[in-house]
Length: 92
Image 1: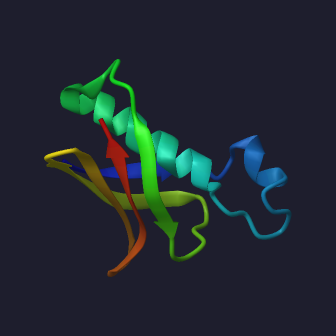
Image 2: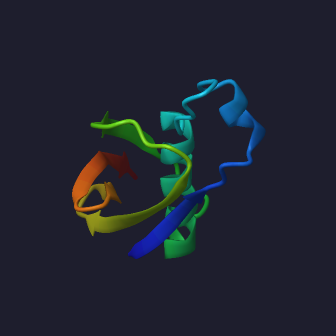
């Protein structure tokens, strides 16, 4: 599944994370992947969050993502321009 995540710059969470230099918290990124997986038909499933790597900080805005189904779960990637900024797996 390919799509776009939108992290709203007007969300109040960015006032504290971090003042003057807003950064999307990793927990929101993982949550976005979990919500996208529900749209793929994995709603109500239990997940183990594994090996998420945050290679670069990202500011609020739009980011393309990809989720691929593997034999043991979902492989997740988030992109900024031409680089992969987040990788991880949701084990089902």
